[in-house]
Length: 416
Image (cartoon, rainbow, N blue to C red; front, side, top):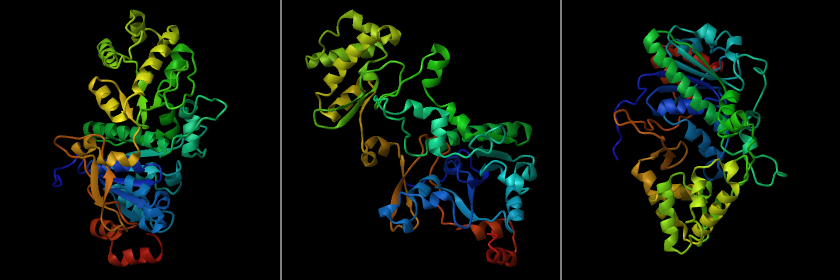
């Protein structure tokens, strides 16, 4: 498919990104058309040195960095050295600054929000606990954020002698960055109406704590704690297993134990089970109550229905089960290996995979694209992930007008 050169939804925005906690926010804006300049230390940002690497070879470059930094440019800058004035010049022309350094790090250098604020700049600070409060200076990691924020208590196994677990993938960064982008866009909308920028203060802890699914409302409104369960949602009461093996040995997932939330779908499911003489006693009207009654008052009935449905599903080949269930509006699926998604016709039809270069690798690779599409303003990969400091000359000399002699001096002094 030919590249779509139409402007993206945030085309024309100039964004500076500094620090290690805002990569996903920067990527979302960059792929949507913003000119995102990644400001890195001379040794490169953390994700450049974190695997996985192609063929386990760090010289090819980090796939983590590549996935999070499509469509961006990279400059190096030593703000603590001779680069502080250059940083201020960069912020002067920025619509948005994504600052995910430790809280007030830039303020201590007289280069943060207060010093660099220029009327219309939207400054988004992403930090572990926010810019103020008693925990402002506490340190954290993804593991700590997910534990202290609450999601880990709902994640794990039926055997509660085993500890809670943390899902891989730095979910605290993804969660907080999604909130950050929402805050940035809201602040830009307000700027369009008022002419003034503002500070958006994102706390990773608060973002994670607000993303605990059913744990919070169950406690707040019912006074009940959810319990960890293997391969399914945590719940106040134990539920039937959702993950099974199909007849042909593949893993399948039957959401909610297969129990629909709609009477029409329930009747379609029973008709399907009738075709295989697997309905048993589920035609009894009492079992339809499980679709509507409070689970606390019909736990035994619900478990019986779920066990019958799961036993039925496990007697079929996975692909056949999956396709038929989805045609009946049942949220059942095969547990796919990650690589199996590369050839899934659904992803291909929606042009989800973006082809592009990977620095240090000979040939094109596929990048995961965006989870949304715009009919008039495409979101796409606008450039490959940048090499470290690849755009120094372009940004500092061509765009900021820094004299070549000054540029060379900064290189010598490690200011850039």
